[in-house]
Amino acid sequence: MTITFKYKRIRRPDNSEIKTPSILVTFGGAGAKYDFMVLVDSGADVSVIPKSIAELLGLNLAGEEEEASGIGGVVPAVESSVQIEIHKGHEHYSFVLPVKVILDDSDFPILLGREGFFDKFVVTFNQSEEKLILKRVQEGSY
Image (cartoon, rainbow, N blue to C red; front, top):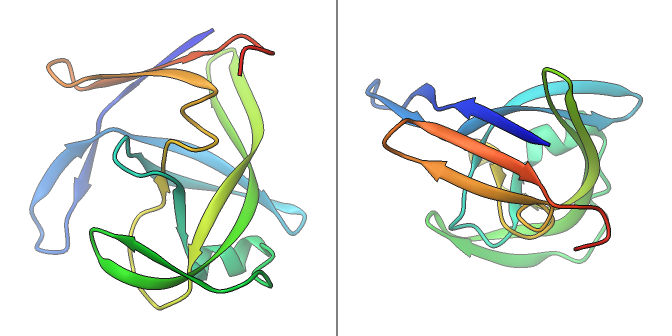
C-alpha cells in the first residue's frame, strides 16, 4: 500500500535543473487517457491545471469564474474535477480529483495540492534521499 518515487530532474525556463517531487499521473478525459508529470506541492491548497490541458482533457469549464491567488499572483480560474490514476508496480489508485483550472495563458506544471489528494495518502517528502513516498490511507478513514 506504499509507492516510492524518486525525485525527477526538471529543467527550468532559465535552463537550470532542479530535482523535484514530481510523479507521473494518468488523467482521464473525453474518452482518452493522458500521462503528465505533475509536481506534488504541499504548499498548494488545491490542485491546479493550465487551461490548455483542461481543454485537452475535455474538463467542464462552465463554472463561475473566480480569482485564484498563489506564487504567480492573482489569476482567473474555475473549479472542475478530473479522474486521475497513480500507479507503480502492483499498486494502482484511481479517484476523482477537484482542480482549479487557470483560465489565462500561463504555462506552469500541473500541481497536486492538498485538497482531494493529501487526504487519500500519507505523503512523505524525504529530501535527503530525494524520494516521495505515498502510503494509501485505509478506505473509509477519510
